[in-house]
Image (cartoon, rainbow, N blue to C red; front, side):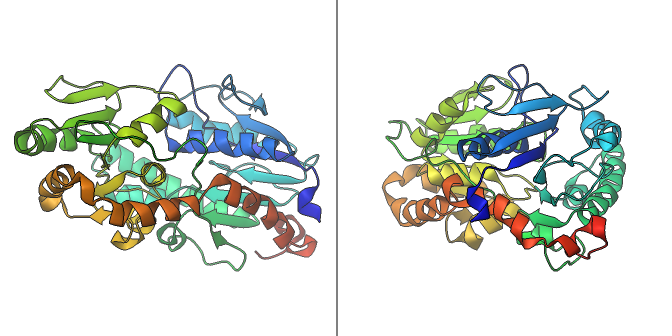
Length: 361
């Protein structure tokens, strides 16, 4: 079977983890994807604007003239300066980033969409950022139309782009070798991953904790995986933990909350579920899909969130009815179950369907 043979893969991943700065979920997804593909026996070359981290098993080639870490480099300069790259030597290109200007050829091209600039635009309040997101959405549409297959991370993301026959919905995976259940802290522990002043709304969760939760649950603790903010009783900031350290934080916490206004999918929800930790959060497109519209966790509106978290932290013995089904749901999203999905789509694209040959995906 062709999938079993060793393939020469090019991965477009301008976002990769860094040992020098905090990076988002997409960068960690890209890193795991590439390492897992290598473990499956494939030869992986990553085109990026970042150097490889120490545990990378793949080769990194820096794209020409676009070394940088800002959004401008990732969204605009890197795709433009990369348009001269020839991918003909590869069996498959998997693009997990902005590739709107990059040259396609006779090699199947799969685009992974982690969310949508159009949805971010709806929830962003800064005018300059809104203008940027509007332009990015146009480039995202162009990227999907120039790719042979686009894999969308959720039903919501899929609805925002042209309807094409070969495109698919492919949920993002979680590594259950790293994220798995274990002993919980003695103190009732709430956990957050994100940023204080972004759409993740960590600052608001901190206010809820100090004003509502801590007075009602005096021994409660809030672990915030983000840049350090103002010190407060019961709050611990942890910046840039390793993946193993992050997994232990999930595992030892009782409740996870990331009250984001928008997530395309929401890997932290899935990581918490895989760790046997109850998810209590506000609804957004990603949370609704990952939590099965409330089947695998608790979705509550903003007004009710404080009381919902108090209830969860004072009834620690009643989580099993939700965390056990959530754990099984997370296991069905394990990398070992899903990694070959990214490769098998190569077989879906027939030579006469390649966009470079005039095919219509």
